[in-house]
Image 1 (tube, protein in one colour):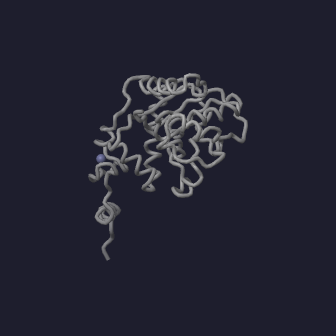
Image 2 (tube, protein in one colour):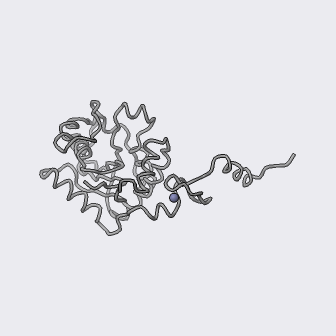
Image 3 (cartoon, rainbow, N blue to C red):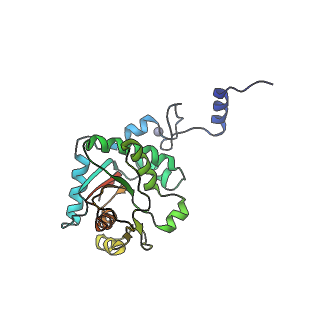
Length: 236
Ligand SMILES: [Zn+2]
């Protein structure tokens, strides 16, 4: 009986389950995972040092002039509707591919480490997901991103540090004051976080309203410094 080499087996499997890029559907090379190089290269990346922090902090301070909850911010890409990055985000939010989030989280971790090489960070907190969404999706995509960031920074993911206190409806469709009302008091932290310097992770930064409210809960529990880190920033 002929023996199938692992290489042949892999090629046969590819015939049945083609290993294609989740964004452009082209066949992947052996050393590519989920996304091809061309697509990743095409994502609109923040290239200049401090560029993403400036954009996010300016947006936060414009929408919430008296905010002191968020101290620093980092993001990797600009989000464009119907762009290739949206396909990748769709894959880990709706198509059950959490490993894409871990992979992109590693890129976010590398970016954070390059942007803030001397930062003392004690833990990485994923923005908690609605309980119903968690049940529906089976995982929290922010936690998967946080795992990727953690692999690069060597800083632990603090799961269940922040919890949703109640079900909030999706923020989509609310104006800013509606968003504020919808999420105010939506988080609490059951354990003290005295003097902790934390990274709060989410997939897409829009106005930062939800992240700011969660950062407030982390600070109320004693955290001293909050950096928000998102994979992408959406225009608003
Ligand atoms: Zn591609």
